[in-house]
Amino acid sequence: MKHLIILLFIFTSCASIRSQQKDKKPNILLIVIDDLGYADFDPYSIHEASTPNMDRLAKAGKIYTQAYTTAPVCSPSRAGIITGKNQFRWDKPAGWGPGLPDSVKTIAEYLKGAGYATARIGKNDLGRNFHKNNVREYPLNHGYDEFLGFSAHAHDFWLSSESIKKRTPDPNGTSATLGPLMHNMGEKNYNEGYLTDIFTDEAISYLSQKRDKPFFLTLAYNAVHHLIHEVPQKYLDKYGVKAIPNYDPDNNETFGNHPSGSYSAYYDKYSRMGDIGDEDMRKYYLANINCLDDNIGRLLDALNKDGLDKETLIIFISDNGGEPLTGADNAPLTAGKYSLWEGGIKNRMAVVWPGKIEGGTIESKYVSAADILPTAAEAAGIKLNDPTMDGISLFAPDKDRLLVWKWQNTWAVRLGEWKLTNTNEDHWKSRPSAQYIKPILNDFSIKLFNVSNDPGERINLAEKYPEKVKELSLAYDNWCKVNLGKY
Image 1 (cartoon, rainbow, N blue to C red):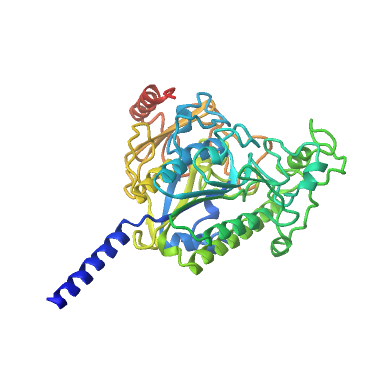
Image 2: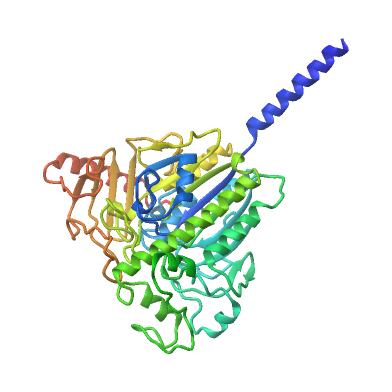
């Protein structure tokens, strides 16, 4: 009898442990890259960029070769990522600054409500209310327990000190920011250091903390965004390009309409083709992405060292297509950031979840960055009850789903292998770099492509298939009629 009781106790204990392991929620690490070129992250092909650590992610999990963002620029795209929704549902102009309504719940709010510790490190950009910590757009006000980073389109890679902020006449522009990083409800000063390294150091520090709950960490790098030439010397040496002096407020140089000595003047000068030529721009980009990749390697090594890799779901994505002005390569896709051509909205995404996702697998069905929230919710055991959610689980992609886009006065829709759009060429404020693939048409005409057979959108089939044009136009119009303006 005594032995029977002992065996029963052991059996019950083991069953309890198995149940706890089964119910254990994974840590979730969301890595968002800024303006990564489609061809510059291609784990199973030879390419020019050095990305062995990004490739580690793909080979440890699944690579999604057709991962669409909800917009072709940072702010609206990031709103789509954290809400699981097309941000133009509430942003009628479908522009640069969608903001974040109180009525729209974020991924951090869902996970925090499910018992997660939540933190965001890096770029926070929803297009409105920059540099403020008392607004809905600030991470601490939409579900994150901790935040370290900046709230703007960009931040200088080198200049993160209080002293440079005091010396600069315009330290807080919307696209040209420098000085201390925002840290929770205050600031954190860095007298030295490179921002990509700083964000990685802070992320590793966060991972090493002891906690009694799973974590959700969003690590949002500003690499490989402007200013692309700002890279540590060893990477410049590797790619054979010279260092360009950092911004100095005592330099009275002007640019365009910017005042003498302003940071905006420096930023604009080096965020367009001209002072940096095509060949060097590409080399600066390759140096920047090489540094970023080394940092991702440091992050993955830290996960492995602490034994967290087996307990963590990792999702890796760029916020939009590669930037035409930085030397990013989106081949074979047409155009890039700022447009609804494939080069502006299509990425490769990696998802790693040991024991759940087989390593080295490829998913060719198209998915959306809006799918990240429902996927994280599913992994955390959260049941979503929101009929306005545009995302679906990445674990069950649908090859015939409807995807829609609206960007200013352009729009696009994808259904199955077909894409219909009125998008035009747009590379914003100067000529694009040599890597840019020019669209076949530069107007607002209706264009129909079979993007399965023609991913580069080189053959307009609108005249050949008028019924398909009608079908997709109706699908887009019906979606807008049902869904727009509900917030």
